[in-house]
Image (cartoon, rainbow, N blue to C red; front, side, top):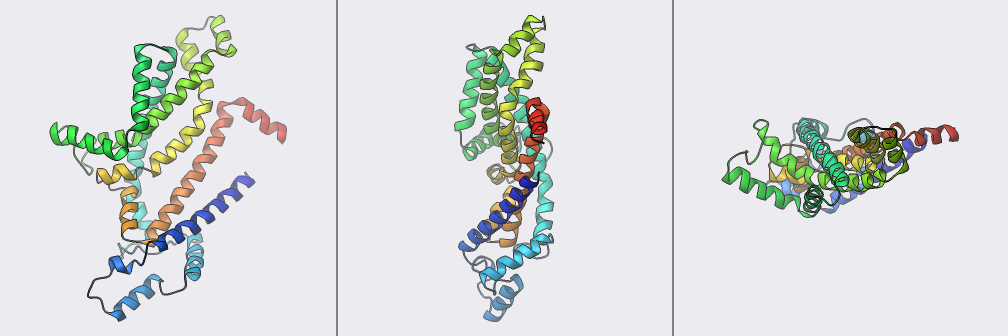
Length: 307
């Protein structure tokens, strides 16, 4: 755990330096945000207020020092709010969409992957592989536009944008989860095919266990080890990478906020979002390690042997 903590701190430092540098490469925020008729005196005062009048190395050291205290500075495009406050206001919407998408990935991807392996070569298997191929090849933005055109504009089943009840979650969650469904389906299919041919499953069948119990209890648990690492990465992608869906559907979450902040060169918000995303990735990786130990007893035994 100590080694993991050191790596996590080093990763956050590296991310902060990279994002800080890349943000400033985009140009001067005043070129975007300052009024055309702003006087030189007012421009100099605003630059001093935002801390842009100091040398870049000094700006970075100030940013790191303030970040340790949880202060990421005031937003440029929301002057009355801090960067953290803006993110906290938008975060619940992204979490709601992300959780719905994660549930959709689990409820569709895992059963389809298992059924595809159990009924290998059947129509079910061919349909499942078609879903996997479509999900991993279709661009998110194109799928979002097509869903809006068909189900919102023409059929009028769902709203085109924003949040107005449970129907607003349907189309964005499909866009966010489609890649995860496809990837998890393929991983579970491959892992289940290998597990079903193992001696472990054959022994369970010889003991007289029902086919459903062998598949959904014993084989599924053993086959879950391989996809687990990917699911951790996938959860991160869903929770923090729904930017395309949020932009297409005007979903008021942190993905849309990141797009707005990047366009406006709102350095404090961009930097805070990058560190927030990095922290989620680190935490999810630690959770995956813990789940490994729970699912696979060999991991726990290996840790005890090392100790």
